[in-house]
Image (cartoon, rainbow, N blue to C red; front, side, top):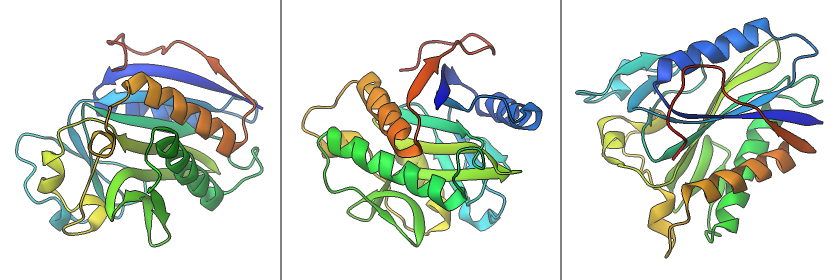
Length: 221
């Protein structure tokens, strides 16, 4: 099974969210699955179940109410975001299996990058190191087709996470890859390793790279 991979570069959040929804609405049983790799301008996104009290002091960073699961999180430069546009039924999977596969892929990516202490938690989706979240998950399934995805903190300004209760947990610590390795790998290496781990965990045999058809942007990272 093959999946299409697109590298979108750095993009504002809302146009990409709208593009995800449009893709999901328009796809049919023959549409190939896709992975979109992107880096976003600073933004807080609030999930469907999000409570306003978890947004403490957004100040100059916009807050966007979106249609994924979960509560509030932050996206910004130095964070790798991957959107998973998957026909879950066709893949013979299900929402819980997809979430577990994503978490496993991130844990294995971190292990390959020299961090062997990362783990998933059954009570709070995502990946953690010493009780600090390094990767967040938030998906939407429509007619068993997924969109939204994961965010993986590489080398970024973590201060905006102090302006929210990350994923609805007051005081939750947030961390990044840079703080757990002696030599920070190139972001492109982290991206390539995560891609391969996602392919392995989700059951794809190959990836076909295609250009992003939206507005032009700078290369990712």
